[in-house]
Image (cartoon, rainbow, N blue to C red; front, side, top):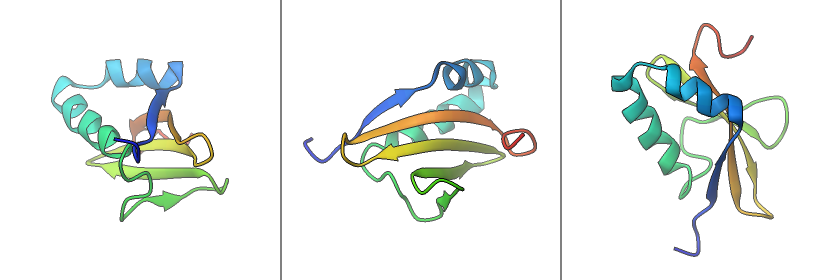
Length: 86
């Protein structure tokens, strides 16, 4: 699909995803996959930088950056809501 963004993961985000409980990983992965087609879904929050956003998936937060010029969504970090902003 030509309208889709490509997904990239920072190395730390990949490691964080691997450490999460398997039941949560499936839902988080589905949420990340949706960002390819809608990088700014309803309910997303813009963080300090104009291109950095956060989406919620249960108790977890996915922090990502959108590059519209290159059509890339880069996953920066994934973590529990208590720890992800530290």
